[in-house]
Image 1: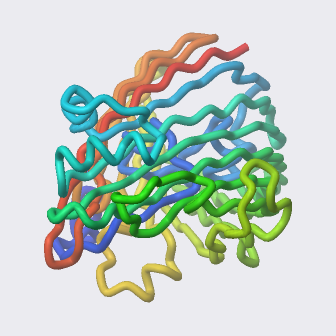
Image 2: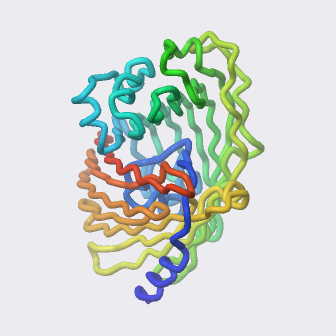
Length: 354
Protein backbone atom coordinates (compact mmCIF):
# COMPACT_ATOMS: atom_id res chain seq x y z
CA UNK A 1 0.00 0.00 0.00
CA UNK A 2 2.78 2.45 0.95
CA UNK A 3 4.68 1.64 -2.25
CA UNK A 4 1.59 2.32 -4.33
CA UNK A 5 1.09 5.72 -2.66
CA UNK A 6 4.67 6.72 -3.47
CA UNK A 7 4.19 5.70 -7.12
CA UNK A 8 1.01 7.78 -7.34
CA UNK A 9 2.74 10.77 -5.73
CA UNK A 10 5.60 10.91 -8.22
CA UNK A 11 3.26 10.31 -11.11
CA UNK A 12 1.33 13.40 -10.10
CA UNK A 13 4.42 15.63 -9.94
CA UNK A 14 5.81 16.01 -13.46
CA UNK A 15 9.19 17.51 -14.28
CA UNK A 16 7.77 20.38 -16.29
CA UNK A 17 8.85 24.02 -16.55
CA UNK A 18 8.04 26.63 -13.93
CA UNK A 19 6.41 29.99 -13.55
CA UNK A 20 6.86 32.80 -11.05
CA UNK A 21 6.26 32.36 -7.33
CA UNK A 22 2.73 31.59 -6.14
CA UNK A 23 1.88 33.45 -2.93
CA UNK A 24 -0.79 32.54 -0.39
CA UNK A 25 -2.38 34.67 2.32
CA UNK A 26 -1.10 32.28 4.99
CA UNK A 27 1.61 29.66 5.36
CA UNK A 28 2.75 27.93 8.53
CA UNK A 29 5.97 26.20 9.57
CA UNK A 30 4.19 22.84 9.74
CA UNK A 31 2.52 23.13 6.33
CA UNK A 32 5.72 24.30 4.61
CA UNK A 33 7.67 21.39 6.12
CA UNK A 34 5.04 19.06 4.63
CA UNK A 35 5.43 20.37 1.09
CA UNK A 36 3.08 23.33 1.67
CA UNK A 37 0.13 21.01 2.34
CA UNK A 38 -2.46 21.66 5.02
CA UNK A 39 -6.17 21.45 4.27
CA UNK A 40 -6.69 17.70 4.87
CA UNK A 41 -4.32 17.37 7.85
CA UNK A 42 -4.65 20.62 9.84
CA UNK A 43 -5.74 20.01 13.45
CA UNK A 44 -4.77 23.09 15.47
CA UNK A 45 -5.41 26.85 15.62
CA UNK A 46 -4.03 27.33 12.10
CA UNK A 47 -7.26 25.71 10.84
CA UNK A 48 -8.76 29.21 11.07
CA UNK A 49 -6.59 30.20 8.09
CA UNK A 50 -5.79 26.86 6.42
CA UNK A 51 -9.20 25.16 6.52
CA UNK A 52 -11.95 26.04 9.03
CA UNK A 53 -13.34 22.49 8.81
CA UNK A 54 -10.18 21.44 10.66
CA UNK A 55 -11.66 23.02 13.81
CA UNK A 56 -13.80 19.88 14.02
CA UNK A 57 -10.64 17.81 14.69
CA UNK A 58 -9.72 19.59 17.91
CA UNK A 59 -9.87 17.44 21.04
CA UNK A 60 -9.87 20.26 23.61
CA UNK A 61 -9.63 24.02 23.91
CA UNK A 62 -6.41 26.02 24.09
CA UNK A 63 -5.06 29.47 23.41
CA UNK A 64 -1.88 30.60 21.71
CA UNK A 65 -0.38 33.53 23.59
CA UNK A 66 2.74 34.08 21.52
CA UNK A 67 3.84 32.33 18.33
CA UNK A 68 6.46 34.33 16.38
CA UNK A 69 7.38 32.75 13.06
CA UNK A 70 10.41 33.85 11.04
CA UNK A 71 10.91 32.86 7.40
CA UNK A 72 13.86 33.92 5.28
CA UNK A 73 15.92 32.92 2.27
CA UNK A 74 19.14 31.11 3.17
CA UNK A 75 21.02 33.91 1.38
CA UNK A 76 19.56 36.52 3.73
CA UNK A 77 22.41 36.45 6.25
CA UNK A 78 25.15 36.84 3.64
CA UNK A 79 23.27 39.77 2.12
CA UNK A 80 22.96 41.39 5.54
CA UNK A 81 26.64 40.89 6.35
CA UNK A 82 27.60 42.62 3.11
CA UNK A 83 25.12 45.49 3.44
CA UNK A 84 23.11 45.75 6.71
CA UNK A 85 19.43 46.60 6.27
CA UNK A 86 16.04 46.73 7.96
CA UNK A 87 14.30 43.59 6.60
CA UNK A 88 10.94 45.14 5.62
CA UNK A 89 12.01 48.66 4.68
CA UNK A 90 12.13 49.04 0.89
CA UNK A 91 14.57 51.92 0.94
CA UNK A 92 16.88 50.04 3.29
CA UNK A 93 16.73 46.71 1.43
CA UNK A 94 17.47 48.19 -1.99
CA UNK A 95 21.10 48.78 -0.98
CA UNK A 96 21.57 45.07 -0.23
CA UNK A 97 19.89 44.12 -3.50
CA UNK A 98 22.08 46.54 -5.42
CA UNK A 99 25.15 44.91 -3.86
CA UNK A 100 23.91 41.44 -4.98
CA UNK A 101 22.00 42.06 -8.17
CA UNK A 102 19.81 39.26 -9.52
CA UNK A 103 19.73 37.65 -6.05
CA UNK A 104 16.24 36.89 -4.77
CA UNK A 105 15.32 38.41 -1.40
CA UNK A 106 12.66 36.82 0.81
CA UNK A 107 11.73 37.68 4.39
CA UNK A 108 8.54 37.06 6.37
CA UNK A 109 7.57 37.42 10.02
CA UNK A 110 4.11 36.72 11.43
CA UNK A 111 2.11 36.30 14.63
CA UNK A 112 -1.20 34.54 15.20
CA UNK A 113 -2.41 34.75 18.84
CA UNK A 114 -5.68 32.84 19.03
CA UNK A 115 -8.18 30.85 21.05
CA UNK A 116 -9.73 27.66 19.67
CA UNK A 117 -11.95 24.86 20.84
CA UNK A 118 -13.77 22.12 18.98
CA UNK A 119 -15.78 23.73 16.17
CA UNK A 120 -14.95 27.34 17.10
CA UNK A 121 -11.98 29.70 16.99
CA UNK A 122 -10.97 33.35 16.99
CA UNK A 123 -7.57 34.93 16.33
CA UNK A 124 -5.62 38.00 15.31
CA UNK A 125 -3.17 37.54 12.45
CA UNK A 126 -0.37 39.91 11.51
CA UNK A 127 2.46 39.56 9.04
CA UNK A 128 5.16 41.44 7.16
CA UNK A 129 6.47 39.88 3.95
CA UNK A 130 8.89 41.20 1.36
CA UNK A 131 10.04 39.48 -1.83
CA UNK A 132 12.32 41.48 -4.11
CA UNK A 133 15.10 41.29 -6.70
CA UNK A 134 17.12 43.87 -8.64
CA UNK A 135 17.97 43.32 -12.28
CA UNK A 136 21.56 43.11 -13.53
CA UNK A 137 21.56 46.70 -14.77
CA UNK A 138 20.33 48.05 -11.43
CA UNK A 139 17.46 49.87 -13.11
CA UNK A 140 14.49 47.83 -11.83
CA UNK A 141 13.60 46.40 -8.43
CA UNK A 142 10.80 43.83 -8.67
CA UNK A 143 8.89 44.08 -5.39
CA UNK A 144 6.10 42.20 -3.58
CA UNK A 145 5.51 43.70 -0.12
CA UNK A 146 2.60 42.82 2.21
CA UNK A 147 1.68 44.23 5.60
CA UNK A 148 -1.49 42.42 6.76
CA UNK A 149 -3.48 42.73 9.96
CA UNK A 150 -6.60 40.53 10.27
CA UNK A 151 -9.25 39.55 12.78
CA UNK A 152 -10.36 35.96 12.06
CA UNK A 153 -13.47 34.12 13.30
CA UNK A 154 -14.28 30.51 12.38
CA UNK A 155 -16.94 27.87 13.05
CA UNK A 156 -17.35 24.25 12.02
CA UNK A 157 -20.42 22.01 11.74
CA UNK A 158 -20.04 18.26 12.35
CA UNK A 159 -22.33 15.69 10.72
CA UNK A 160 -22.52 11.89 10.85
CA UNK A 161 -20.42 11.58 14.02
CA UNK A 162 -17.78 13.93 12.63
CA UNK A 163 -17.21 12.09 9.36
CA UNK A 164 -18.42 15.21 7.55
CA UNK A 165 -17.06 18.57 8.67
CA UNK A 166 -18.16 21.86 7.12
CA UNK A 167 -16.32 24.97 8.29
CA UNK A 168 -16.65 28.68 7.61
CA UNK A 169 -14.10 31.37 8.50
CA UNK A 170 -14.54 35.10 8.06
CA UNK A 171 -11.86 37.74 8.44
CA UNK A 172 -11.54 41.49 8.37
CA UNK A 173 -8.22 42.33 6.72
CA UNK A 174 -6.32 45.61 6.62
CA UNK A 175 -3.60 45.45 3.95
CA UNK A 176 -0.71 47.63 2.84
CA UNK A 177 0.77 46.38 -0.43
CA UNK A 178 3.47 47.16 -2.97
CA UNK A 179 3.39 44.79 -5.93
CA UNK A 180 5.20 46.30 -8.90
CA UNK A 181 8.57 47.02 -10.47
CA UNK A 182 10.18 50.02 -8.78
CA UNK A 183 12.88 52.45 -9.87
CA UNK A 184 15.67 52.02 -7.29
CA UNK A 185 17.08 55.46 -8.08
CA UNK A 186 14.00 56.97 -6.43
CA UNK A 187 13.10 57.15 -2.74
CA UNK A 188 11.00 54.00 -2.17
CA UNK A 189 8.64 55.41 0.45
CA UNK A 190 5.44 53.49 1.22
CA UNK A 191 3.52 56.76 1.10
CA UNK A 192 4.50 57.03 -2.58
CA UNK A 193 4.27 53.44 -3.80
CA UNK A 194 2.08 51.71 -1.22
CA UNK A 195 -1.53 50.69 -1.74
CA UNK A 196 -3.80 50.44 1.33
CA UNK A 197 -7.29 49.19 2.00
CA UNK A 198 -9.46 46.83 4.03
CA UNK A 199 -11.76 43.97 3.12
CA UNK A 200 -14.09 41.34 4.53
CA UNK A 201 -13.17 37.87 3.24
CA UNK A 202 -14.49 34.36 3.77
CA UNK A 203 -13.25 30.78 3.30
CA UNK A 204 -15.44 27.66 3.29
CA UNK A 205 -13.89 24.25 3.97
CA UNK A 206 -15.08 20.65 3.78
CA UNK A 207 -13.51 17.47 5.18
CA UNK A 208 -14.94 14.00 4.43
CA UNK A 209 -13.44 11.09 6.41
CA UNK A 210 -14.07 7.42 5.72
CA UNK A 211 -14.83 5.05 8.64
CA UNK A 212 -11.80 2.81 8.05
CA UNK A 213 -8.58 2.24 9.96
CA UNK A 214 -6.39 4.64 7.97
CA UNK A 215 -9.13 7.32 7.98
CA UNK A 216 -9.01 8.11 4.25
CA UNK A 217 -9.87 11.79 3.89
CA UNK A 218 -10.96 14.10 1.09
CA UNK A 219 -10.87 17.86 1.65
CA UNK A 220 -11.63 21.04 -0.28
CA UNK A 221 -11.47 24.74 0.57
CA UNK A 222 -13.04 27.60 -1.37
CA UNK A 223 -10.89 30.64 -0.62
CA UNK A 224 -11.97 34.28 -0.82
CA UNK A 225 -15.54 33.27 -1.65
CA UNK A 226 -17.02 35.77 -4.11
CA UNK A 227 -13.68 37.56 -4.38
CA UNK A 228 -11.99 39.91 -1.92
CA UNK A 229 -11.75 43.62 -2.73
CA UNK A 230 -9.84 46.02 -0.50
CA UNK A 231 -12.18 48.94 -1.00
CA UNK A 232 -13.31 49.37 2.63
CA UNK A 233 -11.57 51.36 5.32
CA UNK A 234 -9.15 53.27 3.09
CA UNK A 235 -6.66 55.38 5.01
CA UNK A 236 -6.74 53.30 8.20
CA UNK A 237 -2.96 52.89 8.37
CA UNK A 238 -1.51 54.67 5.30
CA UNK A 239 -2.63 57.89 3.66
CA UNK A 240 -2.84 57.00 -0.02
CA UNK A 241 -5.44 56.73 -2.76
CA UNK A 242 -3.96 53.48 -4.11
CA UNK A 243 -5.93 50.28 -3.39
CA UNK A 244 -4.41 46.77 -3.14
CA UNK A 245 -5.16 44.36 -5.95
CA UNK A 246 -8.32 42.26 -5.45
CA UNK A 247 -8.06 38.54 -4.72
CA UNK A 248 -10.16 36.23 -6.87
CA UNK A 249 -11.97 33.18 -5.51
CA UNK A 250 -10.13 29.90 -5.88
CA UNK A 251 -10.29 26.28 -4.67
CA UNK A 252 -7.76 23.90 -3.07
CA UNK A 253 -8.36 20.13 -2.93
CA UNK A 254 -6.52 17.33 -1.12
CA UNK A 255 -6.57 13.68 -0.07
CA UNK A 256 -4.94 12.18 3.03
CA UNK A 257 -4.33 8.98 4.98
CA UNK A 258 -3.59 8.62 8.71
CA UNK A 259 -2.04 5.18 9.45
CA UNK A 260 -1.42 4.23 13.10
CA UNK A 261 1.84 2.29 13.60
CA UNK A 262 1.76 1.79 17.39
CA UNK A 263 0.15 3.26 20.49
CA UNK A 264 2.51 6.25 20.38
CA UNK A 265 3.38 6.46 16.70
CA UNK A 266 1.20 7.53 13.80
CA UNK A 267 1.59 9.18 10.42
CA UNK A 268 -0.12 11.63 8.11
CA UNK A 269 0.27 11.43 4.34
CA UNK A 270 -1.36 13.94 2.00
CA UNK A 271 -1.40 15.16 -1.60
CA UNK A 272 -2.79 18.63 -2.33
CA UNK A 273 -3.60 20.59 -5.48
CA UNK A 274 -3.93 24.33 -4.91
CA UNK A 275 -5.59 27.20 -6.76
CA UNK A 276 -7.49 25.12 -9.29
CA UNK A 277 -8.79 28.16 -11.17
CA UNK A 278 -5.35 29.75 -11.50
CA UNK A 279 -3.85 26.38 -12.44
CA UNK A 280 -6.38 25.89 -15.22
CA UNK A 281 -5.14 29.13 -16.82
CA UNK A 282 -1.46 28.29 -16.40
CA UNK A 283 0.42 26.07 -18.84
CA UNK A 284 2.67 24.95 -16.01
CA UNK A 285 0.86 22.91 -13.34
CA UNK A 286 3.80 21.77 -11.24
CA UNK A 287 3.87 24.73 -8.88
CA UNK A 288 0.31 23.97 -7.76
CA UNK A 289 1.11 20.37 -6.77
CA UNK A 290 2.16 19.51 -3.22
CA UNK A 291 2.75 16.38 -1.16
CA UNK A 292 3.63 15.92 2.49
CA UNK A 293 4.35 13.39 5.21
CA UNK A 294 4.46 13.63 9.02
CA UNK A 295 5.55 11.10 11.65
CA UNK A 296 4.09 11.86 15.08
CA UNK A 297 5.82 10.28 18.08
CA UNK A 298 3.79 10.62 21.30
CA UNK A 299 2.60 14.14 20.31
CA UNK A 300 6.06 15.28 21.41
CA UNK A 301 8.43 14.80 18.48
CA UNK A 302 7.45 15.28 14.83
CA UNK A 303 9.40 14.54 11.66
CA UNK A 304 8.11 16.06 8.41
CA UNK A 305 8.96 16.06 4.73
CA UNK A 306 7.43 16.67 1.34
CA UNK A 307 7.54 18.20 -2.11
CA UNK A 308 6.58 21.83 -2.78
CA UNK A 309 6.15 21.64 -6.53
CA UNK A 310 9.52 20.29 -7.66
CA UNK A 311 11.47 21.13 -4.49
CA UNK A 312 11.95 19.10 -1.32
CA UNK A 313 10.88 20.26 2.11
CA UNK A 314 11.64 19.01 5.63
CA UNK A 315 11.03 19.93 9.25
CA UNK A 316 11.26 18.96 12.92
CA UNK A 317 9.08 19.87 15.89
CA UNK A 318 9.53 19.44 19.62
CA UNK A 319 6.29 20.02 21.56
CA UNK A 320 5.10 19.99 25.13
CA UNK A 321 1.78 20.82 26.74
CA UNK A 322 2.51 24.55 26.62
CA UNK A 323 5.25 25.05 24.01
CA UNK A 324 6.21 24.27 20.41
CA UNK A 325 9.56 24.67 18.67
CA UNK A 326 9.63 24.14 14.90
CA UNK A 327 12.40 24.22 12.31
CA UNK A 328 11.58 23.98 8.60
CA UNK A 329 13.38 24.21 5.29
CA UNK A 330 11.64 24.43 1.92
CA UNK A 331 12.31 25.42 -1.67
CA UNK A 332 10.20 27.90 -3.63
CA UNK A 333 10.12 28.41 -7.39
CA UNK A 334 10.99 32.04 -8.18
CA UNK A 335 12.07 31.72 -11.82
CA UNK A 336 10.24 31.42 -15.10
CA UNK A 337 9.20 28.43 -17.19
CA UNK A 338 12.31 28.98 -19.36
CA UNK A 339 14.69 29.47 -16.42
CA UNK A 340 13.51 27.64 -13.27
CA UNK A 341 15.16 28.94 -10.11
CA UNK A 342 14.90 27.56 -6.58
CA UNK A 343 14.93 29.91 -3.60
CA UNK A 344 15.84 27.81 -0.53
CA UNK A 345 14.36 29.09 2.74
CA UNK A 346 14.42 28.44 6.48
CA UNK A 347 11.55 28.86 8.96
CA UNK A 348 11.74 29.05 12.75
CA UNK A 349 8.69 29.12 15.03
CA UNK A 350 8.16 29.19 18.78
CA UNK A 351 4.71 28.94 20.36
CA UNK A 352 3.60 29.53 23.95
CA UNK A 353 0.15 28.06 24.75
CA UNK A 354 -2.21 27.62 27.67
